[in-house]
Image (cartoon, rainbow, N blue to C red; front, side):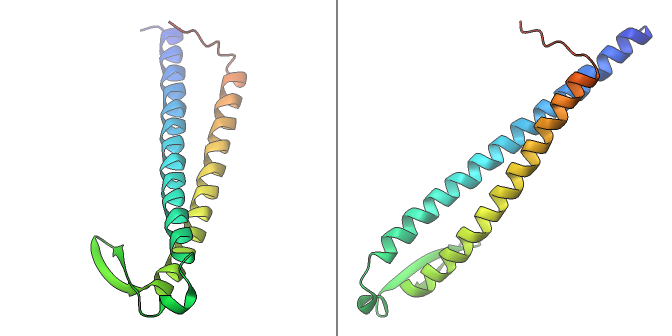
Length: 118
């Protein structure tokens, strides 16, 4: 293998690594967004219950694969905390995704790479 072929293979490998990372991060953002949407729906549904009826009402939450009995107010508090954590996690993942995309753009410009689609 000549040095040009070796350099070309190394560039291709680095490009593929960037693409793989971007795909993985995009999937993570999608998963977190889906979880957030589910949490919002449950939170909205439980919040519609009249506060005077919440104290006696049972509610169940899956925690670590175990279904735990809680009150509606407890679950609403837990959901609010989970929503904040998921928003932070999504924000951090989106920042990493944007940084990775910028890194790919810089890599393409620096190495004068032309994308060829087959």
